[in-house]
Each structure stands twice: as C-alpha cells, then as structure tokens.
Length: 148
Image 1 (tube, rainbow, N blue to C red):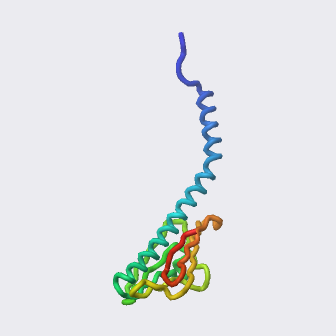
Image 2 (image 1 turned 180 degrees about the vertical axis):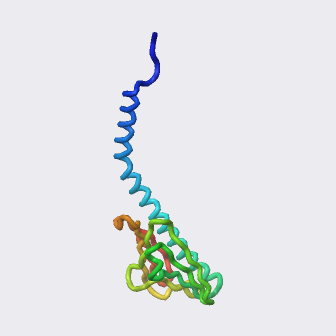
Image 3 (image 1 turned 180 degrees about the horizontal axis):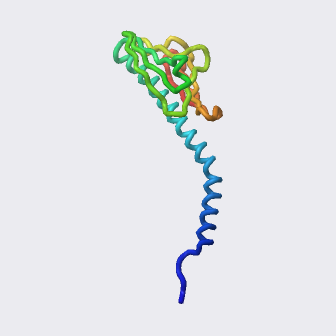
C-alpha cells in the first residue's frame, strides 16, 4: 500500500525554512514600509503647501501653513486664514515633521500667492529611524514646492 501526505518531520522542515525566510525578510519589509509612509507624508505636506498657496490666490486673502512647536513632533500642522479660522491636519502615524531653520511656516499673500521669504525648509522623519527623511523646500517668492 502506498502512503500519501506529509510526515511530521517534513512539516517541521517547511516551517523552519519559512521562519528563516521571514526572519531575513522582516527588516527589509519594515524599512520599505517606513520609506513609503515617510514619502507619502512628505507628498501630503507638499500638496497642502500648494493648496494653501492656491487658496490664497482664489480667496484673495493671506493664508499661512504653519507648524506649532507642540504639534510638529506629533506630525500635525495647521493652515491659518487671515480671518482667524484654522484647519489642523495630521500626517500618518509614526511620522515627525520639523522645520529646518527658524521659520515655523510660510505665508502666502494675494493676488498671486507669493510668499514672504525666499526659502523655507521642512523635514519629514520616520519617528523610529531619523535616517529615513524627506526634505520639503518652499523656494523663491513664487512658493514653488520641492520634495527631496
């Protein structure tokens, strides 16, 4: 009589091989995930800077995108209208947002959405690994946004 199926030993060997492969692949996967989340957060912040500039032109009012000292480390920033209304926006969990330099934000003025300073820089970091970072720059008077 012919036997079919797996023996217990074969099953344990397969589980051991899968465990080894998983142990090798996990750090790469976690780093890839951190890179992806950090990239997405940087792009979201860049889009919100561009949206703030566009809204300043569209509404014909001054608008400011700003990090506050107590919320930037938690991944929050806010958009302020000249009227005093504020919108707080959060980045994905595990991401930190910090200004590079003294400026905590950028102000866009109507009618062309120009900014008040030639260069603003912000950094988006992965909370557990500061080597995973993206830099967002608001360049020139026109407020062009560059993500690096």
